[in-house]
Image: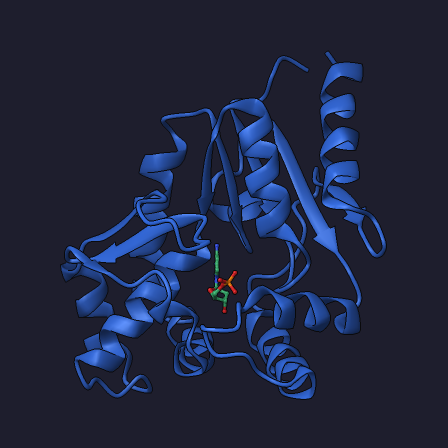
Length: 223
Ligand code: DC
């Protein structure tokens, strides 16, 4: 295949999508766009505004009002990118347990999804982008020439997610992370399915570098 201008990477929480996406984007010189941060940023904004997350109308209104920006990293503190809501840096705040719990609720609201998807498509259509999420290959960018669906078992995913939180940003016990992740799998199930033309990659025990090499070889072989 010619070098795909949009690469979609989907799969459950902790499957290694972010690590793979960032590495692949950097090898290709593409933008790395982790779409989950948009749902997280909206959830944080809703919590900070004192909204009841169980009431869709107010959260959907907020989704249409706030400006979420994802830009390349602006601070040298280990962040892969900077996320701002209405100009305020929320890069670390969107990783809090409160947001983690709330995001599966807000991400189910049709009005929220419509707005997030609209903004994601605007970025995706510019091309030269690796987009990471749950529904990129099925809904956001169904014409993406290369779609990858990552799978890994729950224990492995929980272990990776627990290691992702650096010490200063709220470390949590593995059991707690595992339980939260199992709950989120169930709540994300409404969007979580591979596109019919996605490559399914089971990555237990596979290093991100090996995965990237495999994908680049696949593109080369199918040129
Ligand atoms: O990938 P993540 O854990 O940062 O995602 C946060 C939440 O957003 C998760 O509950 C699933 C949801 N999400 C989604 O519904 N669609 C996407 N494209 C990305 C994330």
